[in-house]
Image (tube, rainbow, N blue to C red):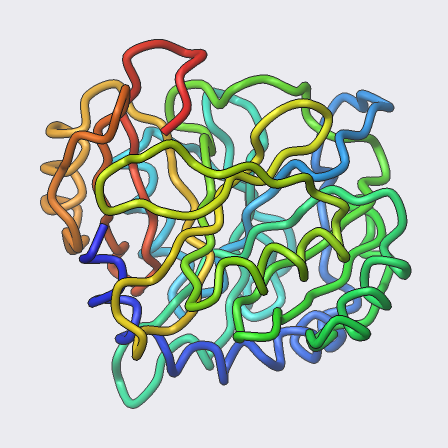
Length: 301
């Protein structure tokens, strides 16, 4: 995955813009924040990435792209002004994420959107306090966001953004992502052990070494007996530290071609990694996202 390191540098400016994401959410106090699950499950899976939030300067273009490539459908809540709306993304009718407008995701005419993943935690204020004491920065202090629940936005010691959430209605059922759903997430960082210590402190992860997988070297993050994500060693020390989420597809070549045809950019052509084939694309608004084709539902990338 050397291409991740090469292209991640191009997104460095967005971290400055998203560092004030908390102010953006605070200023949208009247925005409708939909529940993470509907109907409620009443169950929580701490350590699992349960939601993805796309911060973009062009919600309509992004939605068109994800609809064409992954078959997502959308529900928009709010008035006619995109700056005040929330666009819910659904995969086969299942809510999996949302999109919000932020003009700062366009720098000097160049689109630079970003997906921000939310991790389920038992205690949001405790997670935020642990992040602060472990060298991270709390960008958005814990706040109740409508039907979503209590949420905070955090930047880890190397600048990677993520969120923590205690869902009001519970978390999604705990299973490997189905087609066109979130399947995996990797943190690409310059210091795997330091990052592991940080996320152990904040989320309570256990860590195990990842099996030899060519360009991937690092650790798996586990909670509840299941792998939830990875911490990978960056190949290019100048590249920004970043979380990269992956969507599961049935045919990675077809998905890559569809991304091109829909106005996206292929950052890494499909490669084979153990039981998976992986590629990375960027949507037309600049947000990078991984895509993965797996041989069986139980396989991990």
